[in-house]
Length: 131
Image (tube, rainbow, N blue to C red; front, side, top):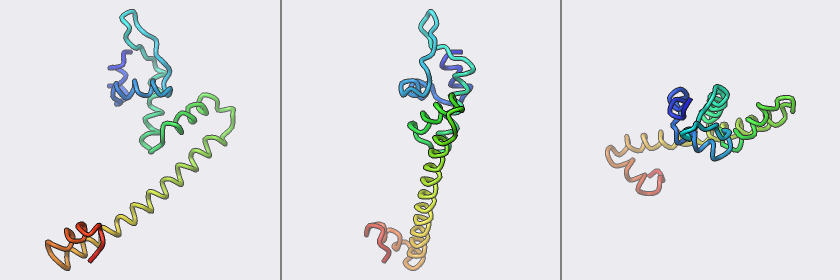
């Protein structure tokens, strides 16, 4: 299939597919006589794997390592486990950060209730310091 067909089937834009090729996540595809990129089922499966990893917030370098593991599962789980553990730690940090942000926003709402129409704006004007 051509890149447009792969993009439609996978839900990933053609430019992103070309970017993944450039970064080495996808192999360079075969070319037609008209120089169109030609992809197969294996390319689609790899692209779907990359998409799922990206949806879970994984970076390209970790995805590249997971692809190596995926192609060589006999190498053991240590590499995959270390990537997933790192990702879990990142998710926990994000949760903590979002929880703190939620608290600050709740305080801003309280500030707005105490000084309707001015409390939130004054707080944000003062660098987020609650008055």
